[in-house]
Image 1 (tube, rainbow, N blue to C red):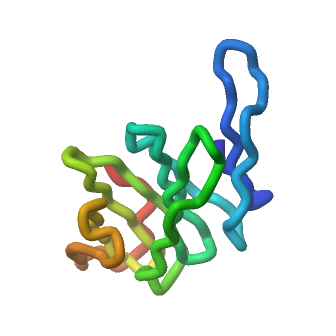
Image 2 (image 1 turned 45 degrees about the horizontal axis):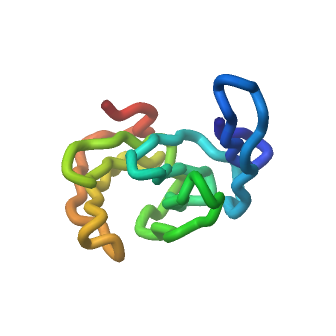
Amino acid sequence: SGAYDKTIKVWNIWTGQLIHTLLGHQKWVRDLTYMGNKRLISASEDKTLKLWVVCTGQCQHTFHDHTDRVCSVAKLANDRFLSGSTDGTIFLWDFRTIQKCKQTFKGHTGWILRLV
């Protein structure tokens, strides 16, 4: 779960026990997606995405390419994911080239609130 308090909570869904609190975003967490292989991507109002290792609670990488708030993130096949921002852009990312956005989609004039 991601929240306005800038944290991400990892829960045991069977017991309700809190496993980890992930800290690192400077503003609230707008969206999350589970990528498989114990990896989670978070999208935040601080203009970043973060890649987390769920079992350790560690941030593995921070993505800084967006120029405005990041509202949405969606998993794709083959270790790829999309992110959407309030600047109207959608970025395509690939874990094989994790350092940089793979492609930018422009066309919306308003916030990108959800991706599927």
